[in-house]
Length: 301
Ligand code: CIZ
Ligand code: SF4
Image 1 (cartoon, rainbow, N blue to C red):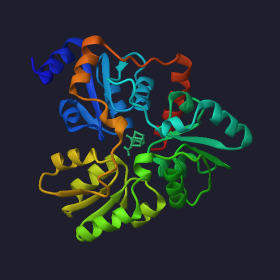
Image 2: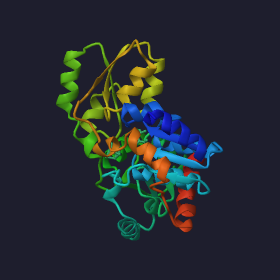
Image 3: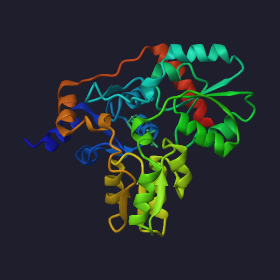
């Protein structure tokens, strides 16, 4: 049986839904029920009556799906698919930081482990961070922002607030340099430059639009332009091209490839469904506390 057919059959048998992050390989995006960003996917999955969620992404994303659907079985087809940025802060490091700034409200990017979310007042995504700060944290005397220093500095600039920043970063986005954007612009002078806020400030300063992955997908669809330089992980170009077949997309850097995002393929999805592995398990107390930070975010976004 072809692997795609096997996945279809197992999906039915298990009553499963398959989620693929925007950065996944084309062969994985093609077999997914939903393709999107980590929070959007987790929310979609929680609304379905599927009993099993197969999350094709990195570990913190599968944890987010578990936090929003504690009654469902959440599987990640590759145990080693982590996020180096999320791993840059642990719960105990955050607890120490909070002790040094007891007056501060804590805000964590969704790219954090569940145990870190559990220690935070608010969660945010790259799509709603500015709004969460403006609406939810307008009266906070101080704000701790973890772990992405570049997203933090972008939101600080937008909201004219100062944050207590953790020096984390995404190695994939940080590798995109000003020169890369300038070179791409010379080659494609008509193209609009879209950059993710995980990029360095030098890069977001050069961009025409600073957008999350879902923001990029929406923007491209509604824009009259037909050429775009994309400053984020290259996996998203597949979705952009599929949804906008007449438009043209160029990566800001062809080297912006997240190795962790490429660890899952169709074969591993089939194995995950066949053998029901690898199941994401979280202590109920962590789920409850982490869910609170997400609920607070949702009130203000
Ligand atoms: O939350 C996500 O899925 C990530 C990592 C990025 C984005 O902009 O969607
Ligand atoms: Fe983490 Fe960066 Fe990979 Fe996203 S692209 S999963 S932030 S390392």
